[in-house]
Every structure is written in C-alpha cells, then in structure tokens.
Image (cartoon, rainbow, N blue to C red; front, side, top):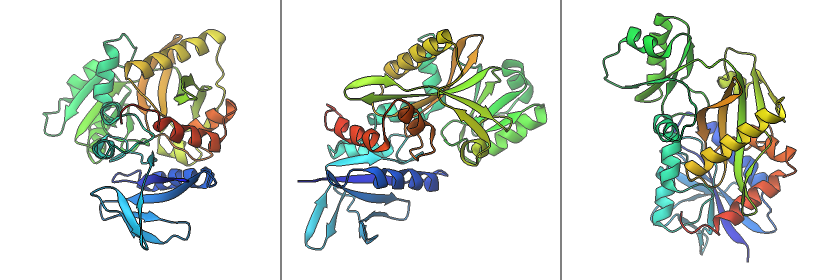
Length: 328
C-alpha cells in the first residue's frame, strides 16, 4: 500500500512563495508509484491539502489529517519544504513530534537552534569554529552606532537574526548606512546580528544523510554580481554558482572537514546547506539553512546532481530516512 506523504509548503514568512516553488518541485519528482503525495499549503489563514486535481481539503489540526469523501487521510510522513517560520524554526516540527509523525527534517530543537543565527554562532564558537566578529541587538536596545563599528569595523553586514533568503540584509560602509541597515533588518525580525566583513571566497556546502551515512556534497563557489549574495543574487540570476568550486585540494578538504564537524556539533539530520567565507585558507562559518531551496536550479540539488544523485533519488532518500529516525 502506498504511503501518504504531506509535502508542507508556504509558511508565515517572506519566503512563503519561494517555499511553494520548492514544495511543488518535490511533488513533481516524488515517485507516485511508491507514494501518495499531497501538497499541504500552510498559511496563517488556513491549512489545506491539495490532491492531483487541485481539490482543496481542510487539514484537521488535531491530528494533521483530512477527510476525502468517506475516507480519512492520515499521513505516514511529512516532507518539510517550508523555508522560514514555522517549518524551519522548529515550531511545526514540535507539533509533528507531539503527534509522533515522522518528518524529513532534524528534530525541533536543532531546527530552532540553527534558525537562530546568534545562538548557532555561540555554540560553534565554543568548538573553535571560526566566524566573523559579531554584535547583537534586540528591539528596544539603546543603539550606539560608534560602539558597534568599533567592534565589527566597516564595511559590515546587518542581518535579521531569524530570517532567510537574504531578506532584510544590508552591507554598510558608513555609520549612517549601519543605522539604515538596522531599521531595515528590524522590519524582518526583533533581533539583529551585525557582523564584520570577511574578505575571501564564499562557498556553500550541502551536507545530507544519504543511505544511512552523512555525506558532504560537492562544494559550490558563489560569485555575486552584486555587492554580496543578496536576494537578487540568489533568485534573480545576479550571481554565478560554480559547482564544483574552484578550490585547491587542501582548501576543499578543510572545508569538507569543517562542514562535517559543524553538522555533527549541531546534531543535525536531514538536509543542510551552510555558507562559509574562506579567509587565508580557513573556513569561517556564516549560517546554516536546514530547509534549503529544492528547485532544479537551487544550490543543494545542483550539488546532489554533481554527486550523481537525482532529484527523485534525493527526495526518496529523505522520506525513507525519516522512517528510520528514533525521534522527531
């Protein structure tokens, strides 16, 4: 009997539409001879399941099921394709944990931890992982721009602490631009992370669990046409993403070793894609995405393809792996 799979997509953040694109690709490539997939659109207004004919069914939040005619559809597994809240920050995963419902992501605590850039950096620094110099702000804090710049220098990056797809991020060259950047970032989040500029090669590293083993995928080099890898660079073709990255053997090995160590330190499972800046041969960790883009043009699927893993195989492996996890 086919297993019923909920491909959750949408969400509550600025990444809602991007998530639907990712989830739709998962739906397209999932083996329908093996699974009965349903697209589940999550929004603040409603949770609905869509069948092959785009017929809508209201999700019963008591047990994450829905009625289809005289049948009650109970899902065997959830494929998490929600970028941002509530799929990537642990909220939805804690709900699935309460229902004892398998899902393709790490458990809710790891998801919450890695979604919070500040907390992730704090953990990794204690393990001697190199990072940029950081300054933190919470909404309502007294802002002393000169004090911030004295610590992180110029130029610097101003980021929302809990957001993805480069929403709300700016690069500041002056005190005034730092001030404007903080105002922009606060539109996305109540917590701000301000980081020093790292001058080096930017790379993106996918680490996944594949066939029971943790696997570092071929590394991607990011060459942005813009001043940094912002939203336009990520989604509007304003960057060159080179896979495999142009690295020496020594550079590749130290990045792979660092990426694997970070994945294990954070007790991750499922998909991850992390960004690093290579400074004088040393990888400096920026952030981790635990629900990375999953379209055919997204970085992690391209890395998987370079490793000989098709989208169908990548998605099938994620679902099969979720049934083997001891906890959710």
